[in-house]
Image 1 (tube, rainbow, N blue to C red):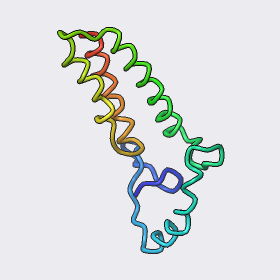
Image 2 (spheres, helix red, strand yellow; image 1 turned 60 degrees about the vertical axis):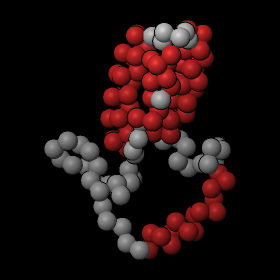
Image 3 (tube, helix red, strand yellow; image 1 turned 30 degrees about the vertical axis):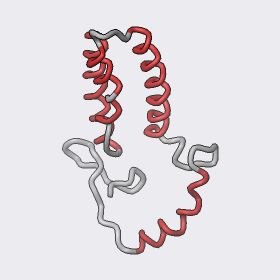
Length: 116
């Protein structure tokens, strides 16, 4: 794991370095698991992180983009529209990995939208 709070940064590229966490962490996870109902509420302690804010923005942007694509949809551009609609599948990972995948997906998305 490379939790943003505890992970040290790699001196060459500035990315977090993974750390090894012992078995005790599983007990901690079991203790906090019942608090899942807090996700997405104002009491979600992780909901204020930049990554979570970005995820919420991506959802809103995606909904707007799909509505826009639906208005432009024709038989000739159906395949391109499907490729654009699948774009969230390319945004995987956590932290810096997800950020890199997001940048790649956004570049590809821009090219596909121009093609549409």
